[in-house]
Image (cartoon, rainbow, N blue to C red; front, top):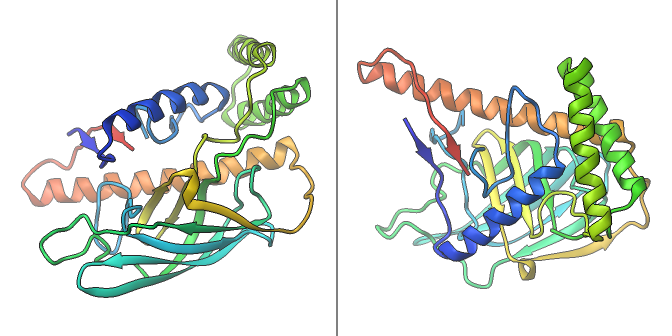
Length: 280
């Protein structure tokens, strides 16, 4: 069973975005047990209304505000357009932080032309919980932290080392990974590339009772409205722990999705075995 997530209508734009994301994935270390590329590459819900895919209500978004001024916590609200119904107002109480380009700030989201992909009088937001509690995924404004530096490379390598410890990777395999990443980092430094904590455009992701929810936005749709001042940079261990929590949330989403599909397969007379690739 091959599963495909919904895409934006502009195929050229999605293709360009996918190429950028796949290139950015070179700088990420992901678990060998849960291999996840960023949204837009090749591979990436116990829900109120079971869905084998993530919710993607970027068309329905009207406006919203998310607050990460309290470390480890994200609160706020959003409004979503619904056909022939009042807007759905949703409040947030999530564990986690924004990525380093906007961590500790308040961000404002907007959409000048909200719409609903359902044309039959229904709404895509049917079954979406007005109280979103759970875990933050990757949340970034797509801002650069500046050019690649030796200090940044050392921080990322230390984060890698924590990951390899967690996964039990040692010996020659670990040394090969270390050399591979060192070469990539040196190439970025030599090319004077800019470093982005995740992707180069606003991306908002979280995990809740509705499963995985993703908003992929344009730069004009996200504004940083409150900054508390300079915040302490996270240590490599803290960066690793944040990534670990996001991977755990994704693993729970994936497990729930497989369980739901297996149950549906059995109800239809199958043996409950399902196989597939989820494309974000």
